[in-house]
Length: 472
Ligand code: UDX
Image (cartoon, rainbow, N blue to C red; front, side, top):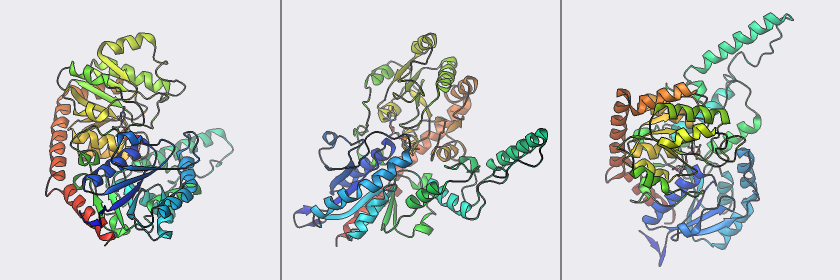
C-alpha cells in the first residue's frame, strides 16, 4: 500500500443509518482497512454504529437532528441530507487535506455537494444491485414518456350517471390495469414486470418522490461507483449512463473478513438460537426473517405462523420488536398457537443471521429478499421462500425464483395454506432438493469470484489502485 510520508491513505465513509445500508458500508470499511487504508466513518447520531465493535476505525458523529425514527423514511433521509451538511463540512475542513476520497451511501447526496465544494473526490456506494438502480432510471424514463401511470386508472369513472355502468367501468379499468401490471417493463430484464417496480405505477407519482428518485439515481460529481454486488448475479449496463469506473466487490460480508461475525447489528443478537440449532437434524430447519424494516399485520403474522406450524417443519423465526402492527412483539399470537409453535420452533427478537445461515441444520430461508439477506443466503447455498414487501425486494425475489431458480415465491399477503405448501415445496419436495443443488452451485461460484482471479477480487484490486491514484 502506497503511503503519504508515514501516514496511510485515509478514506472517509458516510453510511445511511438503516441496518440494510449500515452493515454493507461497515463491511466495506473493513475491506478497505484490510487493504491498508486508514478509515474514518462519519455517521449520524441516530442509529450510530458502536465504535467499540470496530476499534480499527475512527468514528466521527454528525449532528443530524433526527430525534426519533420517523415512520416516513423519505422525511428522515431528507432531514439528514439537510442537517448534516454543515457538520460534515466542518469535519472535513478540520482534517486539513488528509482524505483521499469520501465514499458515501447513494441516498446521502449532501456528501457529494460538500465534497465537491471542498474539491474532494467522492465515490458513490450502492448496497444493492445495479439492476435495481436501473429500474429507477426506467421509472423516470417511463414517467417522462407518460407511459406510467398505466392507462385506465387515472381517468375519472364518470361515464354515465347510472351506478351499474360506473361499476362496470371501474371493473374494466381495474382489470386492464392489472393485466398491464403483469407485462414486462420495456428496457429492463424480461422477467421484471410492472408490478415488480419499486414504486406503484397505477397512480400518478408525486413530484416529491420523482425528485427524490432523481437525487439518488444521479451520481453527480462522483468519480466511481462501488456495488455490493457480483458479476455473476447482476447486470451493470447502467454504466453506459454513468460512464465512470465501477467496482462490483460483493458479497461484502464475505469479502470483509474470513470470520462471519463482524458485529454490525443495531439490535442485540440472540446467541441462544445457535445452541438450539445444534440440536436439530441436518438441513431440517426453516429460518424465517423479514429483515430490519418490513412489518406484518397481526392477521398476516397468524397466517404465517399457522402455515409454518402446519408444515410440521422445525423453524427458527426472528421477529423484531414492533414489527407486528399494534403489538410490542408477538402478543397477538393466540396462546394455543404459541404452544404448538414452540413444540418444534424457536422465536427470537433478532438472530445472528449470518451464523444461522451458515449452520448445517438450516435447510431453507423464508425471506423478504432484502439484498443483504439474499447475498447471505446465496453465499451459504441456502434456498429461499421469497416473500417480498417493497423496494428492491420484488426484483431480488424475481431473480431468485426465475433466473437463479433457488426459490419459491409467495406474496406478502399469503394465506396459511400457500405458506404451508411453500414450506413443503422447499423443505421436503423434489423441487426443493433441486433448488438446494442450484443454491450450492451459486455458493461455489460466489466463492470463485472472491478468490484470486475472480471478478470481485479483481474489482477490489482495481478499486484499491483507483483510490490510491486519487492521491497521486
Ligand atoms: C433494506 C431493504 O429492505 C433491502 O431490500 C435493501 O436491499 C437494503 O435495505 P433490510 O430490510 O434490513 O434492508 O434487509 P436486508 O438487506 O436483508 O438487511 C438486513 C440485515 O439484517 C442483514 O444483513 C441480516 O443479516 C441482518 N439481520 C436480519 C440480522 O442480523 N438478524 C436478524 O434477525 C434479521
